[in-house]
Image (cartoon, rainbow over all chains, first blue to last red; front, side):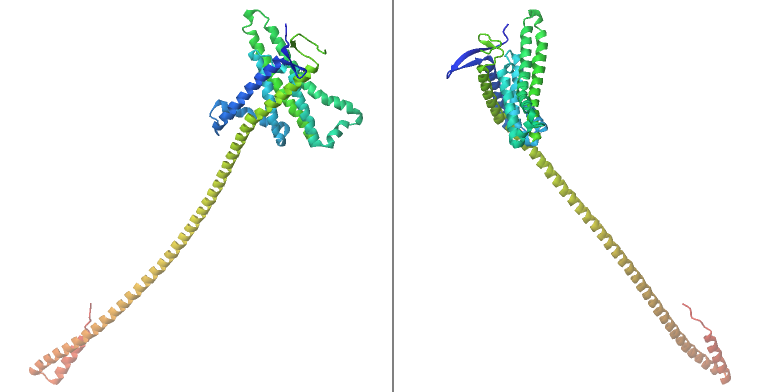
Length: 226
Length: 179
């Protein structure tokens, strides 16, 4: 059984790039989200002060929830992070749920989760330097300079744990679902549906929430430390 | 090759250059997606909701100011009404007092006039009485004289005549006027 991401090797400027299922599925997820965003942008002019449609209610609910979530985690001053985390949240959520439609979730690939964790890592340290100045570097020598290597490892562990947590959970779910589909045909009517609810919907939503919440918490910690 | 689960045309996890290229591609994809979603969805919707929030807050503030103004006006009008009532009561009391005073004056004047009329009438009655008395006296005297002359004519001496006249006058003095 093959649970891997299928790919076609492509040569671009001497580099062998894998045009994989992950990349294609990512583009599909992106296309869906961009189409949704375009529809919202078009319909925004018809949005009323008191929402009249379920669509407006839905869009307002998710945007407002994200805005409140960012404000409570990072403070009013850093509400602009909502722009970034909204995109990350929507991408991870739809990627995790794409397994329901027979796609291989892009988040079941370390390339995707590592890229997302890397952005969090960059944001953590960028904000640390911006807000803490010299105090940021001083923090690595605390409580005693001898602990500098441990502090550095601890900082590097953050994106590693973030990326592997999401990757492992989603890949694990995909493998289990792949195995489940080997059961006899008459059992496939109800067993996979129940497991899809758990592995794709429940675990997918939970892992999305965990990734975004931890990213906000790590950045928020770095900001408040300084 | 540092591949752990290398399969031809398929991979689960590779720790090599391809992973770095994948990360770079996904990084670009994520950044592009976040930028597009932020530009087309998150920012405009948030802007719309914030504008609505501000508009509602403004409306509430305006309503509060209008309510405050209305309350001030109401208080002003209530004060004015109370002032007018006080003024009205004052005017009413003043005119009632004046009216009572006038009433007293009129009554006193009427009484005084009535008394004067009464006194004048009494005086006039007394005068009329005196006048009538005098007139009657004169008539009696004349009548007495007439009687006397007739009696004299019927052999009456002076002594008898005088006695008769005196009796007549005496009787007249006892006459009382009524009315």
